Amino acid sequence: MPDADRPLDQRLSDLHARIRAACLAAGRDPGSCRLLAVSKTRDAGEIRALHALGQADFGENYVQEALPKIAALAGSGIRWHLIGPLQSNKTREVAGHFDWVHSLDREKIARRLNDQRPAHLPPLQVCIQVNIDDEDSKSGLAPGEVEALARVVAGLPRLRLRGLMTIPRPDQPAGHGSAYARLAQTMQHLAGTIPGLDRAAFDTLSMGMSDDFEAAIAHGATWVRIGTALFGPRPPRP
Ligand SMILES: *Cc1c(COP(=O)(O)O)cnc(C)c1O
Image 1 (cartoon, helix red, strand yellow):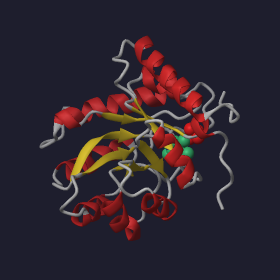
Image 2 (cartoon, protein in one colour):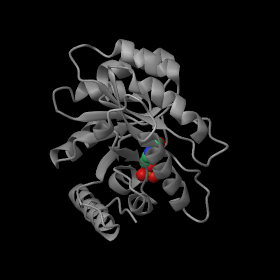
Image 3 (cartoon, rainbow, N blue to C red):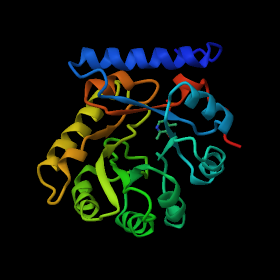
């Protein structure tokens, strides 16, 4: 379990070791799963400290919370990933300031991001969020609805469809392995059916958090999104 008193560099190197070990246990290339540091509620100074240790990818849930941190760390080379819900009145900021969106779940949002992505930036890297097993959550598309959105996104030149993301229901006693296995199956199905898809870039499964990332890696995760095990317990949102 994360020990908030241990130095940050040890927590980071422990996580790298666990990610590598989980990849090897699954017969995967040890570099095939990457760490996304989830920095919601963390300030720019904490992010800077982790970046100085070599961590370049950070995930934020709330656009309004992220923008001041992105401004404070401008020029650092950090890549910013949006992993939380995205409203249409925030798409311009996201298109202008983020590198990735993991939580795309609506055509209207996809079209706005495509129209608003500035010409001087590379295409926005996107994953479609799938609600694989959580009937209570309003985020993410039902598995049967993913293909229609994937077809739209594959045709938008300023977006690059990279794969799928999920947040399994929190209370599942048997663990999240079956949810992660289903997300991987959905991904495989799409890879064979979407016309115009850039298959070489369709390589991303964003799944697994502090408590269950090893199970996600066993099922093919390529980004694990980790907050608590890296930064320690989260303070309440202000
Ligand atoms: C907060 C959050 C995480 C990280 O959760 P931890 O349990 O702190 O590792 C990952 N993904 C999403 C979408 C989150 O909101």
